[in-house]
Length: 397
Image 1 (spheres, rainbow, N blue to C red):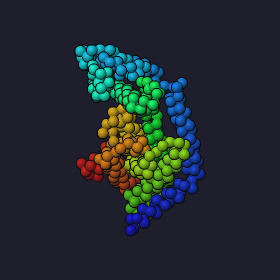
Image 2 (image 1 turned 180 degrees about the horizontal axis):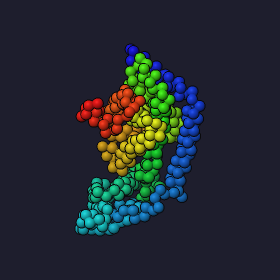
Image 3 (image 1 turned 90 degrees about the vertical axis):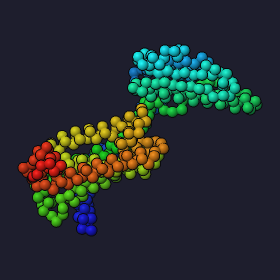
Image 4 (image 1 turned 180 degrees about the vertical axis):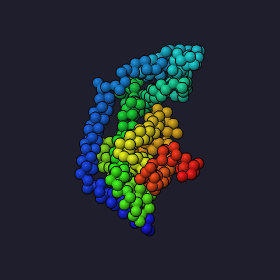
């Protein structure tokens, strides 16, 4: 009980001092203004891309990939978008060899009797060969899936029309887009999840100011002399920052939903984002506990956050292109899949959560250990290598 009371006292102090700070209020509303401008920019960009005269986020996708096509009936070949895929008609004899030499990016073969099978209502066999070392395979696969679904939809409508002779409307073969392109997925999924995780990196300076400020103002001795354990002080300060980040994430989610963004499983997404704040605050606590001054802390937090952002966003981008199972190690990937309404298995969720929990325990343990050392807090401060060896119990103090 004493631990909880001490823990709560520090947290209440930090929250009270932070929330009534004019600097914090100014930063808070500036962040909301930036969010509003980013929403406007993303919506405008997405609208331009979706419009017929819109922009393309690449200079040109013409001949982006080459595909050998063996389709004697010609029905499926007509549905492939020539602006993206350069079609190379073939009989299939040398296509697999061409993939191996890099002359083509894939080989798509259709049953030679496809027209007869369709007329009889039988299944048409199609096979797509891809080089999985080629990153363009995802674009080819998406385009072929779109073509197959378009042909299937047109044939289904044709069968229904024949079954209802009174319906005399003509049904032609046309392209029907059944999914978003990779550029649009990046805009709508990755950009939205970046906005959700952005608040986690905006309040690190609060913890830096709180811990490093104690050193520079020479008030750390008074704080440590209080009947509160050093690690309780640090955890109390960290919890205050997590609570502030949680409030900011909640505010941003409300603004995004009001702005028209669709966020499915909003509660689960919110909890996962807030949970991710814990190891980030723990890492910031390590930097704050070790740094001698604001300049040193600022440099450390900059490099640390670059690594964290890379760890979060790279697997998310990889998941969009590859649907990789291992990409779920990033909570950003899991959050992106949750708000997009994708089906996620329990093991996939556990990968993200277990990683966050393990890193949280590790970072706060190291931060509390540093904060409890007089030589780190008040000097003379040991070097990083010496501290690492002592932490691993390879070297004694």
